[in-house]
Length: 174
Ligand code: GDP
Ligand code: MG
Image 1 (cartoon, helix red, strand yellow):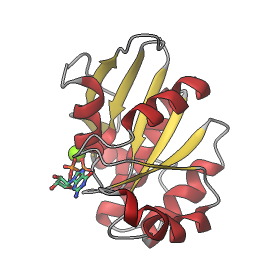
Image 2: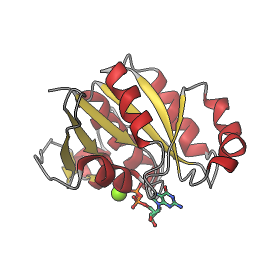
Image 3: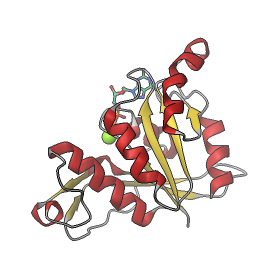
């Protein structure tokens, strides 16, 4: 079954998106050396769409071995290293990468770093601009994210806005 990963810094709404897409059904958890996983995997099934496994990387934490791993870029501090480690774990396993960003907070340096890292992987990648709760703000909120060079899909996970468009786009990328 194809695997789709939600990647992004804390608080952008990855888990809200995960819950909205999966209906909170919990499937599998995995363990990898160097990375402690408290990860959520869930099945996304929609009529007319190919089922896929969605992973929410939010619960992945580096342990000592992971912190010493050559994969994790040097010079990054605490939580930045963890977010990068999460992205790396997702890149290994996923067929489609979704970089989740916070449309209300705007583009952060860590978003840009993640976008740079993910763009270098040879996997389909789009940026999901979450927290675009109303249509009237959409164009304004999206503007600064064009700097990432990524395809942008605005959604509001909390309000279920434009989620079907996101699913259609994922289907095309699978
Ligand atoms: P995560 O850390 O990336 O998993 O983010 P969470 O899913 O835990 O969400 C972080 C916060 O953002 C919570 O307070 C959510 O209620 C809020 N949030 C998530 N999605 C949306 C959204 O579409 N609109 C708004 N306004 N808030 C949201
Ligand atoms: Mg989370």
